[in-house]
Image 1 (cartoon, rainbow, N blue to C red):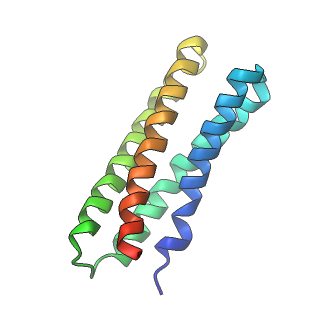
Image 2 (cartoon, rainbow, N blue to C red):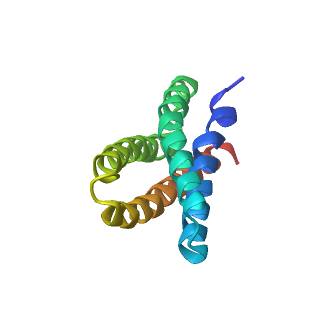
Length: 126
């Protein structure tokens, strides 16, 4: 039984939830929502390597060309989320205004990448 479909929903949910909380924090001007968005993003970053590695293990015998598109977008999501997290950590305390702008920008990109990755993953299943 493949484990990847069970695990992959954690980073998806965490990144989308982070985006939702960050948008609400901007609209409602509530710092607690921004903090919640940040924690969800960090947890999402830590959950992506788990989802990708399990996906590689589960997909090792797949020959469907769609698997390679799904895997490549998974790698891209993994790399970008880690790099964006490192950038955000480096500017978070020093340049809080820039941090907020970059955070929203990175959130939008990561959610876009996760959506594309999920689309190709869904095509493999359905």
